[in-house]
Length: 434
Image (cartoon, rainbow, N blue to C red; front, side, top):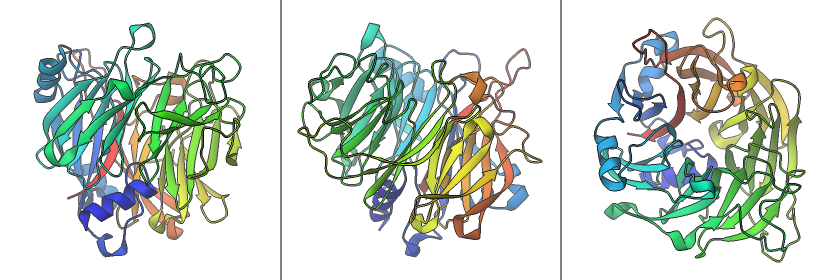
């Protein structure tokens, strides 16, 4: 039953949402990572694990105790032993189907760390390939729902890579023959994958895997998108989209039935502001299709100053899609039946004057949405949209059946350096059933 639950979570939301009623009251943990360096070193980070019941206590959620795991200790030692380099900037986090393993992405050093979820022990560390200009970064590495691979966005290396995986036997292998050079490849229609007019900067940001585990939607920093058949070796582009169709800085997505919702946002010097939500089909892809086919539906588009679409999650029963506007401290609420915007939930106020919501997950019972909140000295994204005042995990009580919410508390994270400066910067966030 647990395996079924995690498969459904993968099908409904990237980091956990939309669960069967039979397990709606299951105990759970919320994992969040402060991506600032471990104290005294230039690598590592801190994993915070909160008990869901502690976070659900209204304003008292601010006092929720956290189990802390120093990623600059055993995890860093393992990465150095395997790769000769320490892991830097733990940026994203995702669980496999079944919740037995966590996959942590290090965006500065290009490491993928696999952790035994129950014991919190690191069991494997892989460094991705050197790509464009010798760069390698992992913005997001995420397991497929069937567990056969981990899709890896090697951001500044401009590579889309695959780690072949066997979670039952703790076997993980980077497969160089499967990768795609997004800076140098050619699309099925004969166009350059990276092109000043079509797709000017092919740094992959987030791979979003559909429920059947075949197709991966790969968002691009400079705009455009590829849909990739991840089961092929080498992996194969089966759909190509340009910057006019899909705007820059796409981040996350969730699947509801036959629709895959994806967003695009601001947060980079060449595209300061922007927010778009698209609904793509999860079928109909073929290399013989012309560009931008099948066409996505534009659900929302907001180019105004301050806008920055980022994290996404679903309410209970997938009735509503929540998308964080990181730049303006709010959440868009979309009715998934009609694709209409039905509410905007403001977050800035008494709990936090500048929360800066980044990623989001929904509790199994649907009662709460949790947010990763950025710090006063952000380490990733342009500071104009990623600077926050209260680093930690935000706790939002869901109301009106998922149509709205009340910001109740912040479970804080802190990493004050020798000069008294707060360095904590929480980005990675996910949820695991206990």
